[in-house]
Length: 206
Image 1 (cartoon, rainbow, N blue to C red):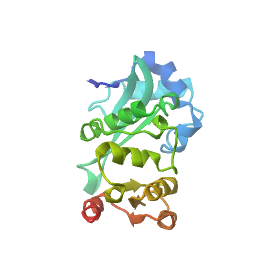
Image 2: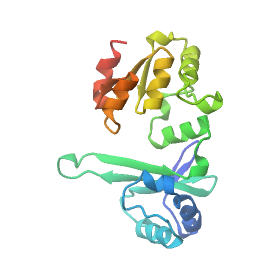
Image 3: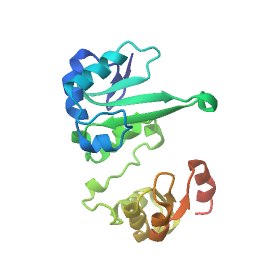
C-alpha cells in the first residue's frame, strides 16, 4: 500500500529502508517526544526488527515517510480500545534534518496529519522572516497578508514563548493547556482552555 502526496509518500517499509530509517531515528530529540517503546540509541538491529515486524501487517497501521526515495520518518495509527474502539490516535516523527525548513516543513507536517487542504497558501513561517517567537513578526505578517487587523485576530498557542508573541502582536491569545502548564500560559497572558471542542465558542467572541 502506498499513499502518494505532493510532498512525500507514505508506504510500507522494505529491508532496503533499514539503514536510512535507523540513521534518522537515532536521535535523542526525536526519542524525547515519542512513546517509551521507541528505543534510544536506535540501532540498525532496532530498525530491522521494526520493519520486519510490520512489512506484511493487515490492515496497515504503520507507514514509512518517504521523501525523494529515502526513509525520513514514520507515521502510525494506534487503534482505540473499549469505548474508544471506533477511534484511533495518529502519531508520527520526522528526521531532524527535515526540521526547520520553513514553509516546506510546515506543509509536510500538515499533510501528514490531513490538515493541509484547510490552509491553502495561508502558511507562514518565522524562519522566512528571520525573527522567531517571542517576536510578534510572524503573527503581524499573517494578519497583514490576510487583510485582518491584529486586534481582531486570535492566536492559539501551547507555549509561553508563543503566547508572548501573540500578546506582543496585540492579538487575543488562547492557551491550549491539555499538554502544557496552565498557570504559566495564564501568567503570560493567555485565556486557558483544555479541549479543542471548546475553541469554536471561544472564537465567536473575538
